[in-house]
Amino acid sequence: MTDIARGDVARGVVARGVVAKILPFSAVDGPGNRAVVFLQGCDFDCRYCHNPETRALCVHCGLCVPACPAGALSLEGGRVRWDAARCVSCGACIAACPHGSSPKAVSMTVAEVLSSIDRYKPFLSGVTVSGGECGLQPAFLEALLVEARAAGLPGLVDTNGSADFSSLPGVVAAAEGFMLDVKAWDETEHRALTGAPNRAVVANLRFLAAAGKLYEVRTVVVPGQFDAALTVRETARTLVAAGSGARYKIIRFRPQGVRAAWRGLPTPDDATMGALAAIALREGVREVVVV
Ligand code: SF4
Ligand code: SF4
Image (tube, rainbow, N blue to C red; front, side):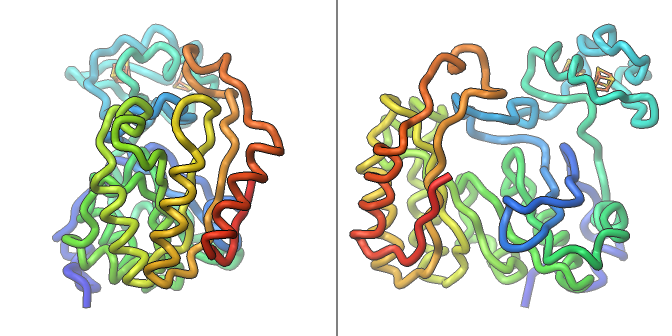
């Protein structure tokens, strides 16, 4: 039983969410071919974020408007408006925004989100809700998961783990599973990497693993920035202790698309990644993927 019942969305109980973008197809955001809904806004500021424009909600300052070469942006009544029909997806507005936002994030209902992917349904295994951080919009997240499931599209939640999912039983019940980032096990290192503590992340790891709701745990390896061996070992131990069959995806840092300060950092070599995978396997994780 979820907190939001079928039909609540239609009755307007859950109104809208702020959506950064929707990908109709992805083969890397969960099992099978999935639509991915990226919600706008994140409470972490990861130094290696590849979508830094999804961090903040737009404050309608208008600074991006003159940067648009296609006339797709305007400031009307103190709010920036984006004309999707004119947009040529050049990214100039995102580069011009000093707030970590995008003028292209839009307020949508659950019905509008599902309608936008409806024609792809025969080719989809499900929907993944990502971000930004989707846990910051829990009512919309739950409603989207409930309605997507009813439409035959089971939903996965891709999260940084900052929301307390043990206090969101409706989201947990409505989700097919969770993909959780464990960015660093050490609290100080996690703060340096993300600007935020990791207590909620570790609590979610334990809670979701014990609940049998974890599909995947991920760690991005950035040489010299945190103790990756400690992170992989402790994460793996936690999964195994909880009897979770979640797979552990260990991801190489890649500098493409990150902010300037981190573009010079190296990508970890095969030996480093292999050693980390060996730690997870030695601890008893059933499936380890290195990408
Ligand atoms: S991506 Fe932004 S700057 Fe480029 S055309 Fe679209 S709205 Fe304009
Ligand atoms: S996207 Fe950024 S620059 Fe453009 S109006 Fe919003 S906050 Fe200002």
